[in-house]
Amino acid sequence: MLGLGTFAAVGPPLLSLLDGTQPSAIQSAALNVLRQFNEAAVAEALMDGRLGGAGLDAFVNEPLNRDSRLLEAPNTIFSPHVAHYSEQSVAETCRKAFANVAAVLRGQPALYPVN
Image (cartoon, rainbow, N blue to C red; front, side):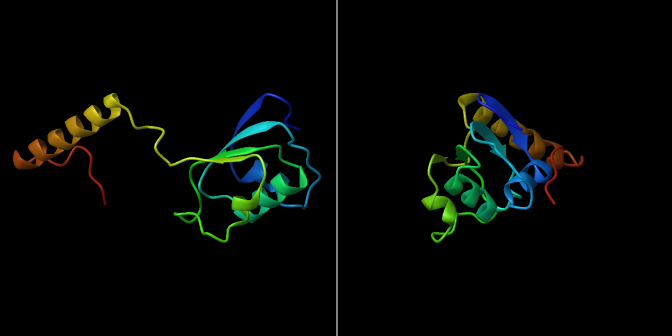
């Protein structure tokens, strides 16, 4: 069981505790949820108190559907999925993009191919 001050990177095994099929009391936890989670189960757990709160910046469907129950859930914070943005990350992204282009122009394989 997660308790006060607990932080957990959450995947399907832990989220299964919130789907109503198992007893659960995750009442004071901060969760970092991957995109693949049952939004309805998390919303229900927030609404009935099995989950004390959630901070979410990624969803199964983006943008979040306007009829999502998560929008009605108490103790929920939503933020854009931009935690990685910084001056350093923008500079690194530019450096890698230019290095990729330079490699291809030299006849070499792309350093960071996207397929």
